[in-house]
Amino acid sequence: MTRLSSRSRMSTREAILAAAQHEFAAKGLSGARVNTISSRARANKRLIYYYFGSKDGLYLAVLERVYEGLRGEERKLNLDHLEPETAMRRLIEFNFDYCRKHPELISLINNENLHRARHLRKSTKVRELHSPFVRMIDEILRRGVAKGVFRKGLDAVDVYITLAAIGYFYLSNNWTLSAIFGRDLSSPAACNRRKRHNIDMMLNALRARPQRAR
Image 1: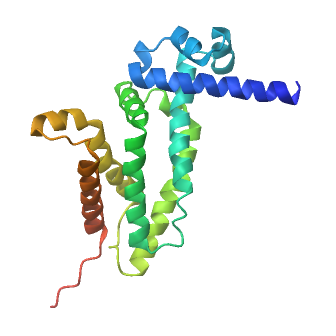
Image 2: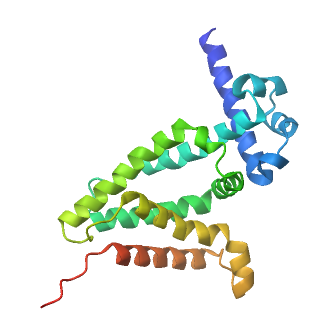
């Protein structure tokens, strides 16, 4: 094929993925309709099956796309040159801000958990995306231990899960939490306050404890 047709194929595939991401985030796998995705992408329905094989195949490609977007932005943080506490602080801030700006990520993760990660388990790409990220966290922790600012024995996966969880819960449950406590927890002021709280909690949990005198 010509170079132009190759570009056209990539453009069409990306349009389908963008439309599908919107549809799956809004309605979940069960509620999403291929016809709606086709119409939104302005692409022939047959092309969806040509590129992705099935609705489930398209859904998995969307999951991979959102994780790839998240990990791609994380790589741009360039944390290697920062002091360990500063690097971890930046990572916590980024995670919270990114999830807040990309609510479709939360919706898609929620939906895939309803399916018990049936689709995500098939993806080698997502595991490959997470491996360097976990190594990055592990390196920050190692540097922190070496400098005496982080305590020993911290596991990078455990730290990542906690880091993600404290932002994820607040944002994924924002509507119900706001209703329960009678506060607008989605306001910029509330989100900034929560982000500072997350940073304080995480860093306090990671910091080395002073040795007690015997």
